[in-house]
Image (cartoon, rainbow, N blue to C red; front, side, top):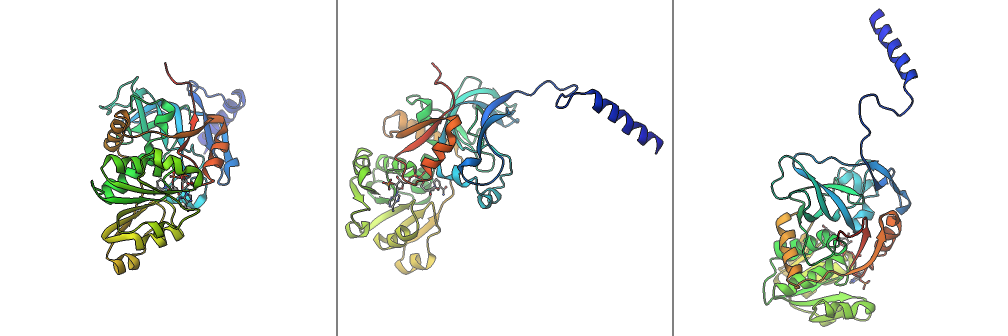
Length: 344
Ligand SMILES: NC(=O)c1ccc[n+]([C@@H]2O[C@H](COP(=O)([O-])OP(=O)(O)OC[C@H]3O[C@@H](n4cnc5c(N)ncnc54)[C@H](OP(=O)(O)O)[C@@H]3O)[C@@H](O)[C@H]2O)c1
């Protein structure tokens, strides 16, 4: 008892002698600029501040982030329901798309070395892309396409992997088939059109009036203005539908798919009764990090088979404005945060 009291006294004397916030033995931890979310809510909860720089674990690389892509899911990560679903705990740094330069590698890393240019889709639980530095595993990262800027590269991972996993992995789209791509001018849609064309498919794509020209430039064989025309009036017997809109758009899509065809939705679960009634298949999809697929996509970009459309950039400190723009649901191509100057 007496010993315990003595230790309490020693601790009190030491605490009184040490100025607040100064640690005795530990050197100051390196910091960085980042967007940090301390509470759930609207874009106003995104705070630009100093934060501890992450240290890579054995299976991670530390990346000096040059640019970070902005996605609708970044917006959702500020909601308590979504954050809990993916196991995100407050405070956290949002952002899943990065392009940058490897600064340091963990002991088990074999694919990358310091100085390599990479791009990555960071897993949904950890995120951390809206920052000067982020960590990524070898499954999440791939060599950055050589022909793009870092800003363009940061626009790629989440949406291109989503389009790839929906069309190639899930719906098994093949040459000569016809695919209907909803929201063809957005992040996922702009890659989906080009991946489908590179696969040798015929593409019908939907968007509003102002984006009809973009659908054609991306390679769509048929562009449908959903504000003027019902897609089901001009589309029938398609092999595959990629749905990124949901609700009424998904409900009206069952009728345009040929028997044995496939509907893949990235925003809703297709209605099994509707699928059965029409003899078609369907699936929902949650995109997963995949380094091999990201490498394949990078090759298609370098071969000029896929163009990256970045419509707007913002500095990291203006992440609020970037997320407000993405939340409109009418982004043309992608929005990207510029975190640092492009390396020479
Ligand atoms: N499940 C997953 O793993 C996954 C992965 C990525 C994204 N997503 C989700 O998929 C959705 C799309 O993502 P994104 O990054 O492509 O979004 P985005 O960049 O905001 O693009 C949305 C596009 O949808 C178009 N659009 C809006 N209403 C439409 C309608 N009624 N019919 C046809 N097109 C319409 C818009 O074109 P206009 O401006 O011309 O209207 C816009 O280009 C989001 O809800 C996102 O959360 C899911």
